[in-house]
Length: 484
Image 1 (tube, one colour):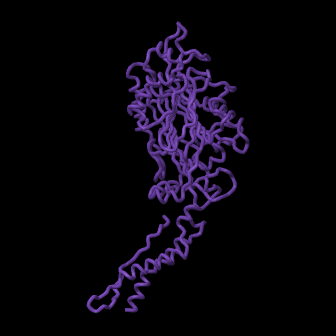
Image 2 (cartoon, one colour):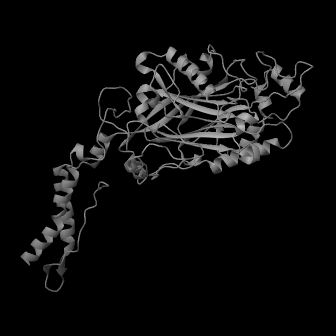
Image 3 (spheres, helix red, strand yellow):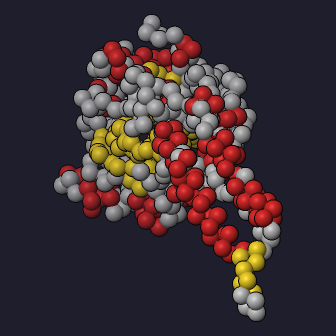
């Protein structure tokens, strides 16, 4: 009996050595080694204890191919693994994830196919008085939508022109240590930054989106992908359509969709725009080499922002619309806005949100004028409309403002929205604490388990009143194991 009891004890306590080996792993051997980030997700340079999960590349890929082709740069498959890990247990994930808010400024403008002058003042559009962490700027009709630009070779001169204006504007108001950087494709020449530091912008015919981030935030941007969808001529040409950017900010996947939808103010034209939205959702795909746990479609992302000239109109006569504009009755006018109706009925952008329309319609103006098109008796009438919009989808958005800017460069007025957006930040020290069990805790746990199980194996013979030892069953420790 004594030898049987010894065997039972050995069988019961053998996991102790294994558990200690698993839990006493040094930091350099861990999948969660620290870099220069703090547990609060600080972007400053001093070293501390947090890092981005799966940070395997020094910078994002610097080239994108149109029509959903892959990045040229190699992608470390380990980049995707933490995305699948973190969803295994929401309770456990909370033990190693912190949250923080980033200020994201989103701006859209249809520039009417005009090349901007070098001295164009866009300070108010990007709101230089209130700097943001991330700028997402979308332009439509960056080139004239004629047959040459639609079917011919791409003209990237406007891209260079606009990027220089944006760069000068943002860097003029920021101190050196927090200068922003542009990420574009193709790399545009710059006297400030080398071309290999520009991986995140894209142009498709007249639709152009460019994303700028604070320099210290750049290292937390990963998994950058671009997808373009044309919904114009024959349903596939890029005179109308979208350019979408997918990227991870810390541990949170973002998607930014810049689009130019079908125009027209006839009855039923809003249904064509609804169809454009459906096609963009259906055909936008983000491919990757590894792809494990990474979002592949727009709705796979946790934070999505849609901006652009959506072209939805107001279902009122020209005179009635002008009357409400003169009275500044924006809420009354918004009741007849097509997009507001489609949102309410769920026929387009179901589940999306938009800020209050507390500003005049942004289209259509006479060039370099405050007058709507049609006030001149000689000109064709166009009913004013809120064509230029910014929508959001997902949790973690806090809208600070939604406004238009009085720039008279084109027949549209630009629109800007500022969000505080919650992102998740990985903290390896919190994870290490969650996984660490001290020797005393192990010994106490083993003693309690051993006593409970040992007593359960002792059976009392009612006839002889003698305690006998029952052969023990196998027992296994359930401790978290590192994924190799």
